[in-house]
Amino acid sequence: MLTRGPSSTGGVNKGPFLAPQVTVVGAGPIGLAIAWRCAARGLRVVVHDPAPGSGASHVAAGMLAPVAEAYFGEHELTGLLTESARRWPGFAAELTEATGVDIGYRTEGTLMVGLTADDLAEARRLWSYQQGLGLPVSLLRPSQLRAREPALAPRVRGGALAATDHQVDPRRLVPALRLAAARAGAVLVTEPVRQLSEPSGGVTVVAAGCGAAALTGLPVRPVKGQVLRLRTPDGGPPGFRHVIRGYADGEHVYLVPRECGEVVVGATVEERTDVAVSAGAVLRLLRAAVDLMPELAEYDLVETIAGLRPGTPDNAPILGPLPGRPDVLAATGHHRHGIVLTPVTADLITGLITGEGTDDPLLTPFRADRFHPDSKEEDLWS
Ligand SMILES: Cc1cc2nc3c(=O)[nH]c(=O)nc-3n(C[C@H](O)[C@H](O)[C@H](O)COP(=O)(O)OP(=O)(O)OC[C@H]3O[C@@H](n4cnc5c(N)ncnc54)[C@H](O)[C@@H]3O)c2cc1C
Image (cartoon, rainbow, N blue to C red; front, top):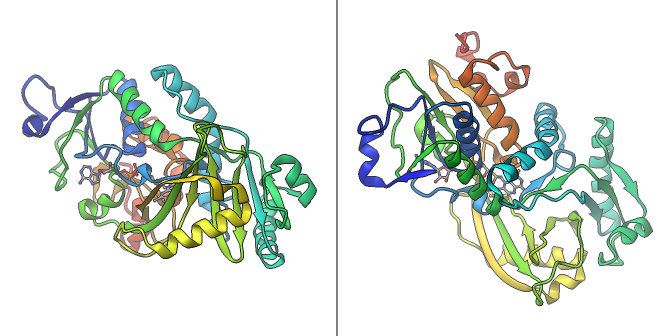
């Protein structure tokens, strides 16, 4: 992406640049994917962000897990996650084709496991629910689990395979999206947007993650997540290939192995706004991780970090026009799912901007006005 520094931001609509048709606030995965898609459609796009890629995506594990993340009472969200995951192979191929960047997209699948009898009972309740939705969850006996991943602890009582839950490396994805957007003609301005301007003929997309609340008044709140990164001592690939998600003595933990030797261990879910890393969280995550995968005790601990997920009251994203502002589209509130939801969000928002997708039924449950009962009847698409 062409980059302009702070000194030139006052001239977004002046100088050699024509006024943007699309102004994107936020250069995380969501904003950059929208910028890429819009610029590739020939629209003039400007993206504003003082620190591109520094939001939740910098911390995220990158699980693409519509099945393992199908929780009770989140039926509509599960539908959107499933649709986005279905688009991921094509999206990854297109992005790699456009940039030449290996984004770490891997398709070995996800093993969900329970360490103790109690852990397994809790996990089975969720797996039954997921199977009841028709999602591909195959129950595995301990011997079948260990045939797939011999490094799992012998104590693990049972598990299930979510073969279609894949992964990508967000720290590769975001630079790739930035490059793709730049190659398509989008311009990056490295300064924040402090308030929404008056309607000017163009469309503004607020894709600022947790920063969206201050700009729009939408109920997006930070949900803290602490994560660890381990590395194999010899730099070779980890001794397991599936993403492992499990319950270990009541602690929920996931382990995401990367080819480069990294394993992401996560994550806490805390109603806090700070990004401090606490000793207790590191202790609990490490204990649960080693309980499931003992060889991790020999790995190097190379990073402890916390990030803020953009959460909403119903855990689902907010996609579409702000009530009373048809020129401002929200693309925020992706909470635990912004990486998996990147392809579908980019397609849906681009469809709204070009006018080709204004009646896409996928959008209906995620409209911005669902949190404003008074404005439910307003025709936001006109
Ligand atoms: C611990 C943890 C683990 C996670 N694991 C996963 C996972 O495995 N799978 C998954 O799908 N998701 C995961 N997520 C969630 C995912 O990271 C987020 O949903 C996703 O990053 C949201 O993308 P975004 O682009 O909307 O926001 P962000 O990635 O937060 O990016 C927002 C950008 O907006 C910029 N910005 C903010 N305010 C302004 C402003 N006023 N002006 C200009 N720019 C602004 C910021 O600088 C930032 O670059 C995880 C998150 C955390 C914290």
